[in-house]
Length: 159
Image (cartoon, rainbow, N blue to C red):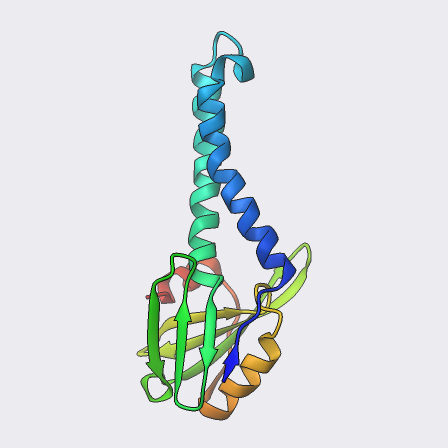
């Protein structure tokens, strides 16, 4: 059985997400101190921008920060919200890979596909033992190829 191990970047990402969630609440409590007497428009703009960023980070965290256990017959995964799902390897049509780039470098993401929908995203950015997990999955599933990354197709393909 192989268990996933989080990378240091993953802990930073989760800490940033939590901070981004609580910062608008702090600004609301101290809005006169932070923005002065005429705070309505400034506060509305800054906090809506921060809440949008927080929403984006939370969705990314829930989709990508996963605890995985892979044995010879099934994949068990839990997301940050601790919802657990089990899949057998027979449930999947195969896997696709893509390369995501950021300022920190390029990271590979493995999509486990069923009926042209990606059910599980396994990201090299978040997992320290990504290569080990990928090599085990490669022995069990068909490689459906490398796909170019796009934010739009990424959101459409996610179930």
